[in-house]
Each structure stands twice: as structure tokens, then as C-alpha cells.
Image (tube, rainbow, N blue to C red; front, side, top):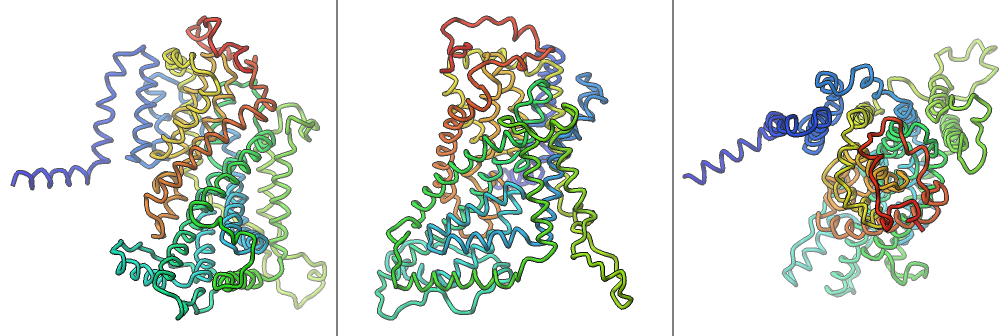
Length: 603
């Protein structure tokens, strides 16, 4: 009876867990207001309160992001006139322009044409098809959201897999054969409900069971099919997360980085769309290749049939899958005026952002007053055109044809569509991050925390980079990547100043590491979408994601110590890293001559 009462109480408490967090967290954190220096204690109280609310989602993420607007002024940390502007900096406008461009691409289906074209080029052998899926997902996620990319690519993958291996009922029957003979558990698989609505598949199975095959052969083939099926689906969210790191607008942490750089180091102009792309794109390609090799090896895509053609049942199924891709690409028809226009503005958008001020060559921004034109200016100019540029080819004869239709022309993008597609909550989340960073800077909290990180000064910088990347990659498995970078980037910036290392040497790996959430379904929305299909188990993601995290950490470390060092002069401590309002606690600290963080410590 007592156990039943405890069980009932536990269930009741679980039902109101969010309300309990909202009530108890502020009370538990109260000692911070009395046990620490006044302003630093108050700011730490707000930061930890927001961190708990973000990690537990006791409040919607966007609502938590707005807490600085009410807490910073009322607690005497920062006046309202300094807090509110943080919610719409030029970085937010750059992000907004990227989201609007992405909604126009989705509106006219250009992303679908790109996806099918890439799959036509790479072919349908498992390893090459996994590569094609990853290339397409990574490229699209550079410009679209990772979630939208995954949601679009998964039905395409499932339709192709059904062409290769037949329907899922057949695979389940094969699992039952294995279960009956060896007593092993059946793998539970479910198909996505929308996959046949999106891609056309003829009604027959891709793999027809041969009467001459033994039960052992059927089981072996079934195992191979299931492994490849899992590999196809798991590669898509992973590639989307990797691809988002290549551009500033690809994922929110990248924008948090540039926003906080402008706040902490106003004189630092090294990071913009072009310079970030020049650094992060090679890193993305390297990591994508390593990820492809690992996933293909783990899930059966790499074998002797990678390049060699064999006239067997698998080859026949591959031909069938190729026919499916060709047929659906044919159904798209020739590229129309709207798609061509979107493609033109998309390319123009990317080229202008890349060439504004790429650092390694002179950009077109030199034609304007220095410091006046930013990436946000460029992005807003291009996306503004989408709202009035016609979606149908203009014709001069229309003016003189009395019988022609007089219906109003339709622009490439309407504001209603933009409102529906743009995740405005992310805009507020970015703003909340910038407001938190401003509060940490103005209150001296970041400097106060940095003063307690002295033991890290004895760690070699290259090792510190790997540690920072690994720590944030692990932390972001359980929390939003945006919330993670918002919480830790100010501390990492202060740590870099404390140990006299170029702040970019720590901040860039931290930012990139926040996108390496591969191990759990709850880590990112793309992971959740792939897991919700029912094809993947948690242990599949943990096993694959653990090695993915290691590969990501090593890739980032390589990039930072090779071309990253050359691009951003990471071996020197720059003048712009000495902000005017930096506390004397940090500037007056003396370091031992043998500290690996001295200016000459980076080889």
C-alpha cells in the first residue's frame, strides 16, 4: 500500500514537473544573490535560471529568451535601453534574410529538383547513394534549416529504399524467419506515411524472394537490407547537422558567435560570411567524407560492389531504384521561370555575401563607406526583391492583347508565406543570447568566472581546443545547440583573454562543436525526425554518434591548427582582444614564463 502511494505521488509530481521547476529553481538559486559580489551574483542568478529553463524547456525557449528584458533592468544589471536593442542586431537580420530565402526555395520546390539531380548523378549503389544523400542534405542545410532538410530528404530515402529492398512487410517477414530459427528478437520497422505520396513507386517489391534461396540466404540478405536501410536514414540528419556549420546562416550558433564577437570585441572584423565560409566549408567537406566512410562501413554500404557491377538481384533492384529517381525527376518537368528566378537570386545571394569582404581578396564593400555595409544589408536587399519579382515570365504582348487575362501578377514570395515559414522563435532566441552576453560583459560576470579557470592555463592550447569541442558536443546532446552556445560562449571568450590566447582559437571550435549532436534522438530536431520513422533504435544512434563525435573533434582540431591558424592569425594575441571595459582582475594577472598559454606557446 505504501509503495502504491509513493508510485501515485511520483506520477503526480511528474505531471507537474515543469511547474515545479518554474517555482523551485528561483528559490534554489537565491543564495547566489547573497554569497557573491552584488552585480556578478545577480547576473549569474539570471544566467543559471535561464540555463535551467532552456535545458528543461520548463518555458518555451523563446519565452525564456525574453527574460533578460524584465530581469536585467529590475535587478539593476543592465538598463532596458541597452537590453532591448540586442534582440534585433544586424546579425538577426542576416539570419532572417537567410530564412526568407529558404522559404522561397521551398515554395517553388527548387530544393527537390536539386536533391533528385544529385541522386541521379551519384547512382544507386548503396555506398554511392548514401554519399548522394549526405551531399544533398549537407548542401541544402547550408541554406535551409536542418529540420526542413531532413523532413524533405527522409521520404525520398524511404521511397528509394522500397524500390531497392521491397516493402517493409517483406522485411518483417524475413525478420520472423530469423526469429523462428534463432530465437532472436524482431526489429520493429514502420514506414513514413508520406513517402509514397511524395515519390512514385510501382506496386511491386524491389527485391523478389527467389524460390531457390535457402532460409540462411534469406536471413543474410535481410540483415544486409536492414543495415543499409538504417544507414540511409541515419546519414540524413547527421549530414544536415554537418552542412549547417559551413555558412553563417546555416545554423544559429554561428550567428551567436558573430554577434557576441561584435559585443565583446568591437574591433574584430575577421569573421563575416565570406571568411567563415572559406574556413568552415573545407572543414565540412572533410567531416562529411569521414562521416560517409564510417556510416557506409558500419551499415554495409562499403563492400566489393561499390564500383563493380554484378548481374544479380541486387543489381536488378538498383536499376529499379534508378528508374524511380529518373521518373520522379522527369515528372518535375523542365525548369520553369519561377524556379530559374529563385535559382538566380539564390546564387546571387551567396556570391554577394561571399565576396563582400572575404579578407583574402578585396571585396565589393570597398565601394561604400567603410563599416557601413554588412552581410545583413546584402541579405535584406536580395530577399526584398523576392516580394515583387514576378513568378511568371513578363510579356510585352500582354499590354496590347485585350483578350489576355487581367489577373494580378504573383510575386516569387508573399509575406503570408514568409510569416508561415520563418521560425520567429529562433529570432527571439538569438536576441536572448545576445542580451545574456551583454549582461555578462557589463556586469563583469564573465571576467569573474574566467578568474576561476586558472588551472586550465596549464593545459596546452591544442588540447584545450579538443577539450572545449568535446565538452560542448556532449552538453548539446541534452540541450538545444543555441542555448548551449549562448550559455558557454561568454565564459570561453573570457577564458581566452585570461590565458592570453587568441579568442577565436577557443570560440570557433566551441561554436562548431555545438552542432555535433549525433548520439541521441532528442539532441536535435533532425535526429528526432529520423528516429520517429521507427527504423532506428537508440543504440544505433549512440553507436554511430559516438564515433561521429570523435571524428568531428579531430576534424575541428585539424582545421584550427592548419588553415584556420593561417586565416585568422591564431598564433598571436590580437590587439582587438583587449576591450576597454575589461576588468583589472583579468588584465593584471601575471603568468609564469613556462605557461603554455604565453604568446609564444603556439608553435
